[in-house]
Image (cartoon, rainbow, N blue to C red; front, top):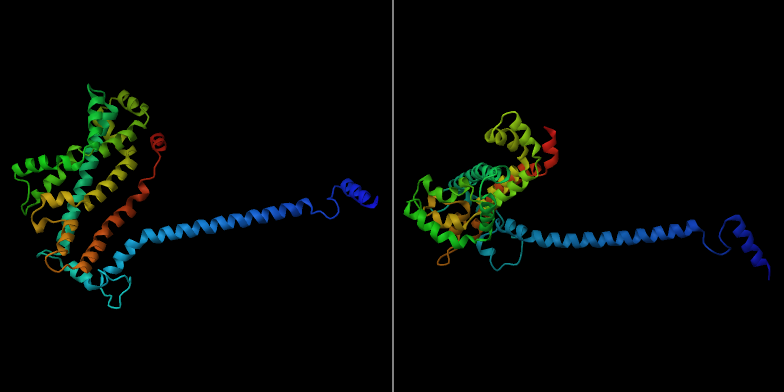
Length: 319
């Protein structure tokens, strides 16, 4: 009866486990293997759920791409994604245009409005942001609060008064480039409160010592703005440019109201011409033109998305 006790005592003296029990290394190995299996199971579950969500989110885009290759009569009421009659005929029709105007006419109109919107936003909103963040003048906080309050004002509330003003000025409709003025004048007057607010918050993060050092050297506000602020505002300017371009390019409601001539239609307004409830609707060509309209936005984002990431403090201390 004393032999097991003697073996237990001898094992404890030698620093090993009791007879018949797993060692510490074996228990650690089993625990590590169990934790590894749990981690692998969580990883598999996470990637499975992520893949399902990705498929759900990308399904509309895949449907639109595949529908642009189908004949129009196979798009509506056909649950199948693929078609035996797939071809590029819809893209040929889309490039040919509609209502007597080619695709490139609509593309040029959208490009003019989007590019001028970027120019207007970067110039006017950066100047307004510099005034609100760096210049002390009476009523600055009140004016800034009023500007922020316009973000809560729906666009549809002011569309009728704006239309009356522009129509009285003779700027609504027409076939000349002046028909774009109602769509662009607000961009050059700093009327986009979102971009002004974004740039104001960016400038407030820049060190005030930069301004003070420039004033000691005799620089005024124009020199401080163009030589110091603008180079440091590159991340905010690029971010504002991307949003301004995408919003102007995808805008449908405002061009629909102010542009009455098909010669001045943008791509988004031209897409509406392919759907006619009273006659046949060419959904295939509409899908093809929608794909072509997405390409410039995608390329614009890919070209400038690296510039969005930037450190405010790092940029301010490098110079």
